[in-house]
Length: 398
Image (cartoon, rainbow, N blue to C red; front, side):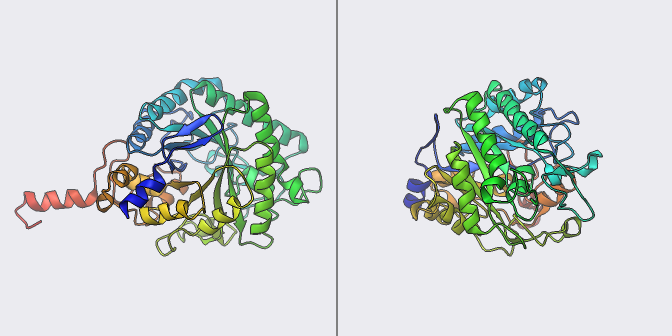
């Protein structure tokens, strides 16, 4: 079975002009490790370098803000100004020196703009995601300016040495809010029909391609469906990705809004579902959505969501459900997952327990942390190993 896993996960894959050495992707996760001025820090560079060293083929660096008023966390990377290029370049270099492809995720917070910064949320319609919040509705002209900001951030990413970008059009940030019938009640060219609701994302892809050329990879992360009323059906999700792919997207990263919400943050939002698998969530909850998306597009499809079992991950590729698999929290816990699987050392993987410690900290604006790995920015230090060494030190049986 190890040979099957190795065969499936460790074949090269190409998107636009870039080739990744394998099919394992580090999914973007906001860490709150950036400086108060949105600059990349030494800690962040160490964090990403360690995960690149761990053997993944591609790293999608956490969401970077395309505007200072569109941030989604307390200390978030910025990509909206030239001054960020040196710090972003350090991140890209640290990743690429270890043989991984480096992509930068770009995000406008929309109805999920970070409230702790004293910023008002804004969206395509005055429909909020948080309890008691009503976003300011952006005009068509302002949405065109948002597209320009995505282009500018893409240019900064390329100047910094990133191999490509990923647009965050999932999880009810601005592009996602434009796509969803739950948050988009517009009646102009950016609302109503599926074509109109997908317009902002498609035009953003087209604008980036027009500026940087067809060889510069642009991934798009989307919700395949939403269990909301009204929400995006899977059939509508397929139409949306077809439209975005026609606009030039080079890969589709498939998430969904169909899972119960972390009870620790449930009081913060006015919707009953989310995108974060929990301990009780069965493995691979979004795999069938990825398979449905793959049936309608000719570009690589990335599956994500509790895929830390190597056999499950490899099987998803071999069964044609996706072209790449993405890991998020699992790589917080064990950055060497890919290396261990590649060497047939599956039994040595330290598996994520999906305890939500990292997610809760991030949502509160705190530094991301892991309940098992006590050192996220270098060689892991595991809590269980510390306990064993202390028992041995004091003469107890290990």
